[in-house]
Length: 252
Image (cartoon, rainbow, N blue to C red; front, side, top):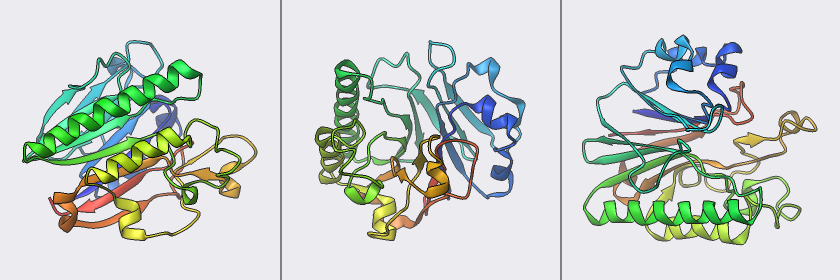
C-alpha cells in the first residue's frame, strides 16, 4: 500500500489551483490532508472524485482554521481524537486490521508561551496514547505535520532557528522520546542522512525556489511494522501548498 500525508493549507485554495488532480493517477491507498480549513459542506467536489471510497473529516469549530481529512481505498473504523478535546480538528484515527493509522495536524508553538505549552501537552498525551496501544499488542502508523524539525539536517538554517518554535530543544526532545519508545522515522530509516530534503518552505524570499526549508512532515511507524516497510519518500515536485506531500510504501 502507498500512504501519503499532505498539509494542503486550505483545501479550497488547493482545489482552485487544480493541485489535487495528480492524486487520481498516483496509485495511492490512503491520503491524510492537514489544514483543510473548511467545514464538511465546504469541501470541494473534486475531493470526492479522486477514487477513494472511505472518506472522513474532522473540521475545526473555528471557521477557516485547521482541520484534517482522510481518504482511503480500504475499509476502516474512523474516529476523531480519543486522547484530546479536539475542537480544533487536529486528529483522525483509523483502525485497519490491527493497525491504528493517525492523520494529525500537530499544534504550532510559535505564537507565545501558551501555544508552546499547548503543543507540548498535545505531544505528551499523544505519545502516551500510542504507547498504550503498543502495550495492547497493536501496531501504529502516524503521519502529518508534526511542526518540528528533529535534527540539524532537517532544516537549512539550524543555528539561526535554535530559539524558534519548531526547533526548540524541548520539541526536538519529544521526537527523541517517540523514537526511544520504539517508533521509526520512516524517511530517515530508508534514506539515511540524505541532506537538503524538506517538506515545508516559507512563502517569503523565494524559499522554495532556493530550497531553504524544513522537514516537519513525517510518517512514523511502530517497530512491529518495520519489516513491512518498503519505501519512504518526499514528493517535493508537487506544488499547491507551502508543504509538499510525504509518504511510505508498506506491506499491510
